[in-house]
Length: 118
Image 1: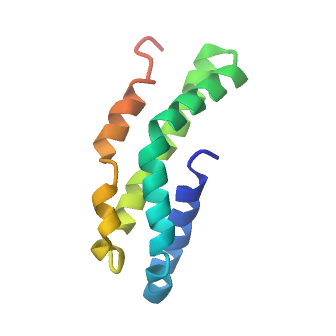
Image 2: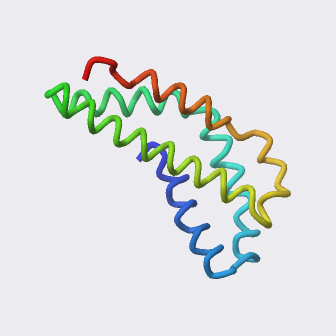
């Protein structure tokens, strides 16, 4: 999936935090650096590709639009969770946090794919 690395990290990191495995999470800094930089570089293009894939796969416009919106909602939710993880110890001291794409920019882009007439 387009954002599979981030989704996988969120699931892993939430489990580490839940189990108080702070040292294990501390060892994920390089992984997070790659995820943040990859997201910053590719997120807009990935949203466009998801849009194209869904619209090709679901020829019924209303169904395709509903599926696209559900997918993009999931993206926003996971990106929010990703950001939240990075505000917690030990992640909150990582310099890579300064390179995060502002979630509001992501939300604005997602809104561009929401039809006003459905």
